[in-house]
Amino acid sequence: MNSSVGTNITNGNLVLDTETPVMTFEGGKLYRTGSLNVVELHGSYRDMGRQYGVLLKNELNEFYDNMSANFGIDSRFTHNAILQTARSDFRFYLQRYKEIIYGMAETSGMGLDKQLIVNNMIKEIAIYINSHQGNPHGKECSGVAAWGNYTSDGQLVFGRNYDLGPEPTKYTTVVVYNPNDGSIPLASVNCIGHIGMESGMNKEGIFLELNDGHNSENIPRYDRIPALISLFSFLENSADLDQIDAQFHTSYPDLAFVVNVANETVAYSYEWATSNVMRRTPDKVGLLVATNHFVDPSWGFAPIALNDQDPVYTAHRRANLLALGEKYKGKFNPEVMMEIMNIPLEKGGSFRAPNDTSYQIVAVPKELKIWVRMPEVQEWTEVDLKPLFGEK
Picture: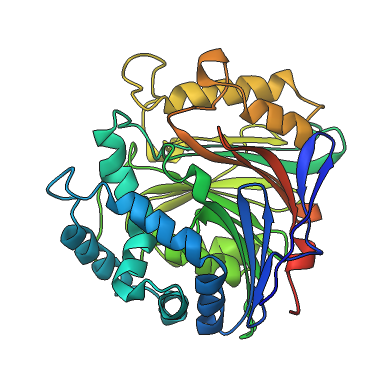
């Protein structure tokens, strides 16, 4: 192992230095800019897990210690209850993703049970911690894509706010997986230790992000592969939008979600229920907005009114982003998208801080670039994924 660090600033934003890793281990590399950790992993899935466990050992253990301090706030939020749920979910993981967790448990010093709890903590934060801390409306996210005549150069740019409360913010991590089995390398942006895919991009320039969809269907299924694991597989096995479309039409989730998918030329929203899926076309040619309810008319749902019957503000956020799309038509680029994603809900945007928005992403699939912001912790940081995909 070795260590060093570097940071650059371009156009007022931080830029990750991918030339100088902070640490290396068995072919894996850790980069850091401020509070944002980026890990580049290589090899078998067990190898990549081992690398992850060593490179972020301190942060993984710190996250477990901080979250476990909340054990007991609810009869369902105890060590044994959370471990039971984590084990139940884990048994349906595809084997290669189990190998990542096994590898992490080998080298993080946490052992398998703690590693499973950390992996499942996002779910627990959504269900229990937020509700006990006066934040019952977490897990409600927003996405907007602009391209064509909505952007300054025709290039697609995607903005995403992930709303799960403040607990995950300082542990936001970019993990780049380079498997040696022929799967497509990909990058995941998520809370540390969680390997499910909620926001990510693969080497072929397919970006996806997941929003909760229980406002339209709340029928959990406990006999299925967790959707976040399915999405990991979708992104690893899709070189184009036709392939990922086929994946959505082949596998139904354990819960209802809205999954937004884009490449360099177009974006679609998959309204993914437990027994059906609709690929919704863009709202306008060059503009797609999606929040936390199904809007494709094929479902037959009545529109959600902009009143007190919109408790998670899903209709409000959608209306705000559609209006901003028209206001900035022809001007969208990464910098403009960052400004738009920073506009608070109360001022006509979708940003919900300091209590709801955990992290934010702006993505340009054609350039394989993302920008990540950690509210109240770190401003926008540019991460060029190109040098992180490929040989070690």
